[in-house]
Image (cartoon, rainbow, N blue to C red; front, side, top):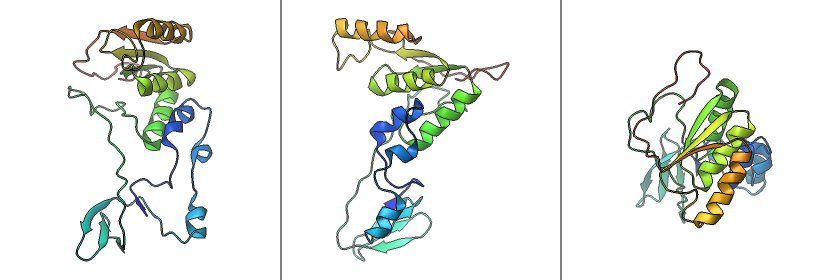
Length: 191
């Protein structure tokens, strides 16, 4: 088994409780490294597969590690959508997909006081809640008229927003992000 991440498999759905400080990486691990050994599974962590040789029936990782296979299962995961606007490569701009992203947000919350979360869908609201739980002032910028517009009607979304505002979250709705700019001055602001 190859994995681009340096960790064995964990439950990505539970990254939000890790961000909020309610759980740790150890809590969300599905199988630790010892489990793989005990089940005679060769585990290649931190090795991204870059080539599949179907004729020789082997996979090759970026570092040159190779492994033969009889059957091959590709579990490719996903990549987060990054807005096509200027500023997405600035320091402090973090996508949210894996434990490395979660750890980067935890580090940012320890260093900065303000965060902007772009997107008022479920994952954006979970990120906002986690950052708020870590002591940040959080503003959610959302393109649509109400939060979680794919899952909730207007009434339910208004109730959700009121509940989240009572926890201290702030919202900018019907707001399109055109650019991301870095914070200045005292080092206490994040983009």
